[in-house]
Length: 256
Image (cartoon, rainbow, N blue to C red):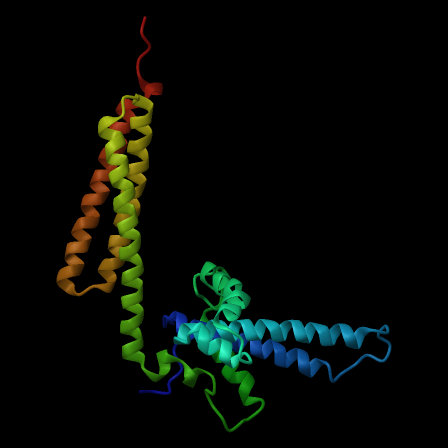
């Protein structure tokens, strides 16, 4: 166990990412609440109400992110319902499923893709924000992350999750490829066979990329096996493109 802040290259698991997301929303709420203390005397009437309502809207977002974090930590909907004032499991599910769906749509990440920041950057910023409240406390937020508390176990868990996700996608690709195999070998339409070959080539290229990723997560012997399979997929993808070019009706010579 360590209290060292993870560096920017550290991969955080979804549970830590959810904690970071909750922390970011809580900080924004705190900032909005603090800003309510300063009021422009020349502001139009109703300004205080508008700002207070904005605060309430942000509070709703904090609650939604709290639910996401609790779910990632393993809380059941029944537990969440009890924490939310004793509402039923079904009521809790209906209320916060949209937040869970949005969370998964964003890849279970605290920050939007392309934001230029990592969750570990955000965690360090939250640590800094807390020191303004309590200068004697260091790493108040980062110290709660699994990547800090249990670095080796968390790294293993993340690798396991990543490998499982890759395996799931590889299963989908195998099924899609099998469907295309049937079209390639049995379709009577030349153009359809050509299209199936090109599509199968794309799937095989994606399969190769995923096998390379799986190799990075695996032990040495398995890693070599995955890399060899990736090379076979690339060779098969190239062959598919070659056959597609031969079958392409647009490239066929015109009959006189």
